[in-house]
Image (cartoon, rainbow, N blue to C red; front, side):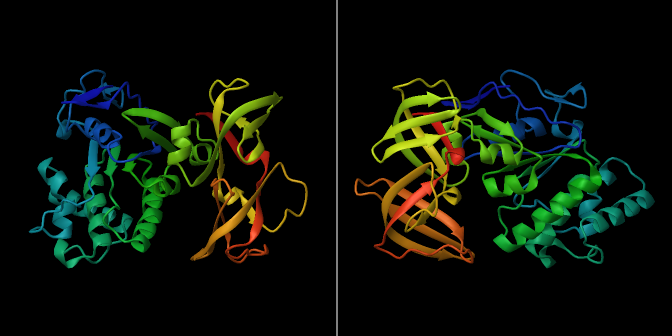
Length: 350
């Protein structure tokens, strides 16, 4: 499907398929089109072309209340004058569900989101995390075929966000409802989803399991967006089987993963993740790639040690490793070697 606003192509030939019971996360930078996709699924917008199908039914022109979907928003959108139980039971009450059935439904959902005992409180008497759980329970009260979650944890602090990520996975497992989750936080997408859809400029840039996306970004844009990478520009020098030799300003580099159509002499970019690069006085054994560098900065970030270094020509490398590892930590100003295996390096057209 496609969607255009004045002067903006929000979605272009956007094709998203969600299996029954699947947890899919849409991840991308601000303005990439992921929220537009969510609004089209929820019935808050209409596509300019294409259609929306849910459960084998074309719902493109149906309003939100006529679709088998419900949405959880970042700002909770709870009714402040209603109790927790009344908020959760609001949708079923509008549908004419009898009071006894509503009470049983609310009690079950409170147990599901682990909020037993707060049913008489107002939203203002709850923490942010509790309010978000109420919002999730209220969305589930209508028994949707698809639950849409639009940056639902964005307003929470990092510790609480981590706790609720675990709870969301548990709720998804217990219900088996299809979840479509929008976030700009790639770590959150990887932690939650069965399948990650990377959205860029209104298109699906790449999709796959979290491991597939992280270990093998399909394009240079995806490599720059997903995770922290080191990048070196060069030209293809030779190809021997699955091993690519790249001529660069820091010497010949070797990689075992190539993306796109590449030929000898073509300008390319070599990418290698920071955690796959070691920066130390000298490699303990033969290595595929080794670049002499000087250490510029050593920073301890919680359990992680982050070492920044560069070549005399200014090519920068960053290495991250656990602080409790057995490696010898370099100091600022040390002349050392940055090295990594060819199996960890990816090559993209520049």
